[in-house]
Length: 310
Image 1: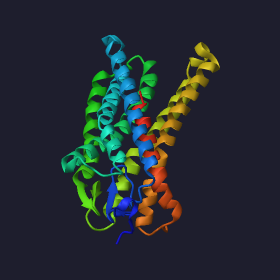
Image 2: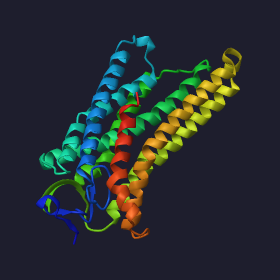
Image 3: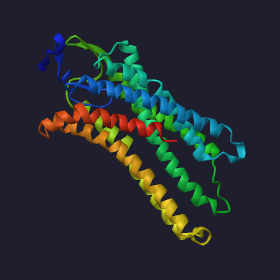
Image 4: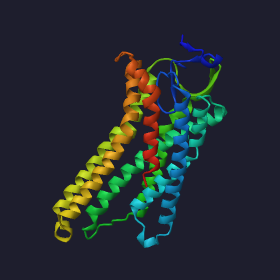
């Protein structure tokens, strides 16, 4: 059975549930680390909530002031991205409260499912709309010089946004179905409790890594590569010179690097946990420390990128 820690006169599990996953995607749930670390993470969640609310509300305000002629497809995706981030920011205080309570979950089973769904939904919608923005950027520029081109495509953008919300909801359904609040070793926990066997965990992590990281990253890179090639081949050198091309190149590199660096640690640590669970990689002290300290920071980094997207 799980090892126990009797600090503070209480028995607490170092590994809470054999076939469970916490809401952030951490497998083989580990010793929770020192309380100052919990408090620091809770404080950062609250700071992220405040900054994210301000920035996303500002984006919605500024876009709302645009007249109809100034609206375009990419703004539709930005609005949807901001709305997705706002609904996620509203649940961050609950996760901060859980961290303050040493990862005790005081809000019950229904709230556990709701918050897991909202958190998972935000992960998928953020990545999906970032990808849609990349496709829209390329399509807008590529079609602008064509006589029949329609660089805005508002109707298309709205239909695509609805489809992306539905797709994100479907992708979040497994997390919601398996989310549960349970009591283990005198601790109330909000976990994803999968059926017996490790393959549900493997499938869940593979879905997240492929659908919410690798495939979108490939699409984003392809779209911006095509965009750079297109700009360099067209008349922009004549009107803007190489300086304009360099500006676009730098902007593209920043967008891709931000997406890659903010999401990579989250998916690497989650995939590492699956490999350990499948006994393809041996358990190690470094794995334990990565889940105690690096994993919460990786999750914060990923959500921070999502909330700062606009």
